[in-house]
Each structure stands twice: as structure tokens, then as C-alpha cells.
Length: 279
Image (spheres, rainbow, N blue to C red):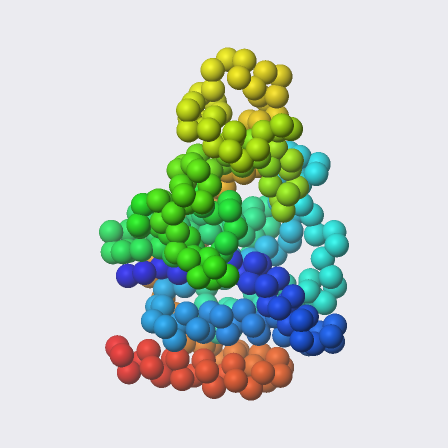
């Protein structure tokens, strides 16, 4: 059994701005959401049977209370924001498990789902579909891997080490030192990627750094590490069996009609028929 975990928020952004290259700003109301559905259907057509999609129901999370500069929903284009919640409803109508996150982020849901799925002996591999550097911390050998659709790469633990210079378990420490502009925290001034990787590889986790290594910036580094560390304690499901795709629900007919994308329903039905014939 292979578990596929999809970053729905990333995919929504990807499709929205991908379409912008061709629609000259004339955004279709559900164009990006439909793109995400087609992406999920592509996975199903390629043989995926167990899928979960994580989304940010709101952008803000508990991390905004820890650091005032942490990312917010400010600046998200209205045409994009208007598709967040319809996407969640569409995924559920299509029969795909969706986790809309409020206090936690979509990344936390992916990390939690990967943690839960990896505990099941029936699971051969967990594939996390996102290029987000945060999720590299979830990679475990060949069992939990990160799938980067843009670069068409599958990153196991060795590939993560080659890309960042540190093993997956130390990614939060690495990010705490170098910062993450996308998430809104700067890291420590004067520490670049090379020096950060060297320090982490030499000393280990920030908590294990020799006294005085970071001086007065230690507390700030620990705060940034907390921001970078994904939560794995969200109880999203009791069994990976809950992630099995069994075809669309009756409600999907109405969504497909509303969406203006006639291919969606046809493609979904064909995938469901193929699945039924295989079982």
C-alpha cells in the first residue's frame, strides 16, 4: 500500500498562477480548484488508491501568536482566496479525504498524516506531494519520501541531505538558522546555508550546541526552530483505510456542472470504473 499526501494549498496556488500565464487576468471562478482536482485524478489514474489532501482553511495558525512577522493571508488575491473553501467541498464531493486546517497549517496535517501512516505495517511508502522545504523534515529513509512535481524528483533521506546539507531530522534546526522568507521568519543574521549546515552537522540540534555558540541569539534560534518544526500530533484518521478512494459521491455531479469543466465528471467516472473492474 502506498499513501499519497497532497499539499492542496500549494497546488491551488500553483494552478492559479499557472493559469494566469494564459488567461490574461480573466480568472475563471473555479479554474484553479479544478486544476487541483485534475492533479488528484492524475494520481488516481496512475494507480494511487489511498489519498489525503491537506488545505489551509485559514492562513493564520498558532505560529502567528509566536512570531508577529509570520505569514498571514494579507495580500492573497481575492480571486484565489475565493477558491479555497470550494476546493475543500469539491474534494470531499469527489470522494477524496480532505483536511482543512485552522489552528494548525496544511503542512502540519501532512506531517501528522505521514507520521500516522508510517506506523502501519501494511504501508510500503508514504509520498508527500509538495516542494515545501519544511516537509523535508518528515522524510524517513525510503519509507516516507517527498515528491517535487516541479523538478520531477523523489527525495528520500539521502536526497534531502544532498539538497540541504543536513539529514531530515535536523531540517528544523537548519531552517531556524537560515530562516524561511516564505513563512516570514528571518533566521539569524550572518548565518548562511553553508555555515548553518556545518554547525548543525557538527553539533546536532540547536539545544545541543555548546554554551555560547549562538550567544544571546539562542532563544531567538529556539523560537525559529519551533516555527519550523511541524506538528505530528493531529489525529486525522484512525486507520489508513479511511484514505482509500472509492469514487465520487453523488454531490460531485452538481459540483462538476457548476465548475464549467465537463472533463471532471467524465474523468472521475472513468477512474472509478477502472478501480471497480480491478477489484
